[in-house]
Length: 181
Image (cartoon, rainbow, N blue to C red; front, side):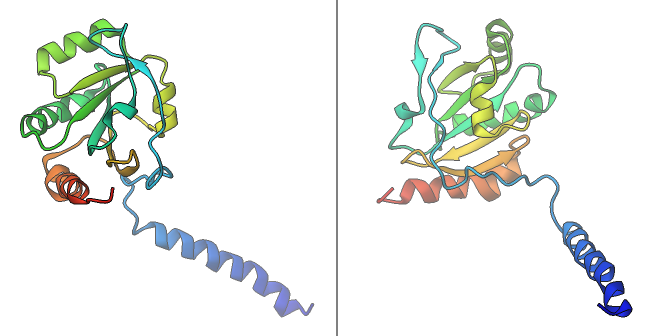
């Protein structure tokens, strides 16, 4: 190999790395892609917050479009998100299931009693295993799940009025209108 060819190798490697870094400048750091999009929502059976003797499974939601919201009473961002979810719930657009993540039953129930309960059911993921199955990076996170139990969308961070208006509600309505789901 000639000396000038040997000098090209580090230059080419530098340009490749620089290209990846340059592309990264245009990515949204708040968007964390989920490998679960388009795949079946992980199955689970967890005790309900209101009655730990009763188990809930996503199988109960088959045939309808619904949201799974991972939250916790100790989560500051969940406080910001909560009134938005309560308003969404009152609009009866789609049911919301709460996944109380690494929390205590007493703290979670107290929090819902104080701020209102937007959930048709809340389950307790006290050890966080279901959250891990769903790829929860940190609460809050919300998943839109279609009629067949497939994950159609993942909202990382708090659900905002803008996220509902621009992304979640249009997607939910589209999925609800699909006949062959």
